[in-house]
Length: 287
Ligand SMILES: [Zn+2]
Image (tube, rainbow, N blue to C red; front, side, top):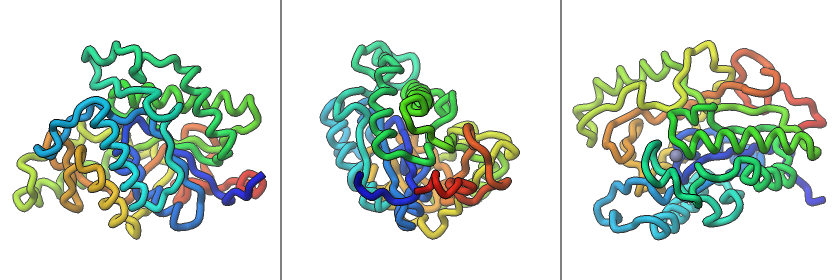
């Protein structure tokens, strides 16, 4: 068996850009520390709205190919070498926002059989043997069908992998503590006139916001904030960055967090709060 880094982190996301927005600082930090960081992205985001006018002609498969190139560039910025598409390129397509006709496309992730999709992820889990899995909460953070389905697939894959020889000791969901979000949006109101965005988003627009007491783990990625911002910039069809803020295609400014927050959904927290996703793992789990 090939030699594996002692610490192995697997992240499962719906579209190219979600990883950089949610976990960019965390991914850069652990990659810089020599951990193996593996990203599995479930779709190429073929139905994403494109921000730059000169790229708005890109739709469907052409947009997917472009977003794969953006993802590749983003991973270079974060120092992450191992990134994959669930089931291989083109296996699952973007389902679009909840309630649109694309949700019913048989090729969409929303229509995928969860067990089938999970089995594709189990192969990755058994190969990488991660101690830590990061994904979304059951609502997908904000109700996008691909994010909800990604949660289901990741959690089911962890269950199936446990029965097939590798139980992932710690599973985390992406979170933002409510008071952190509120304070950041208060600062945003002050800074807004100087930003290239006309309006501000609100706390309700941020995925995964919960009451502070649910946060188990705080990853200080300040040292990797520049890498995170560069990775987000690489997703130029989807994100406009003006540090320390950014906007999606709705052009509403929101904070760019370089400290990232998690809720431990499976496993034992080593402290409260933890400052390391791998905290408390027994040596045999970390080798
Ligand atoms: Zn997404």
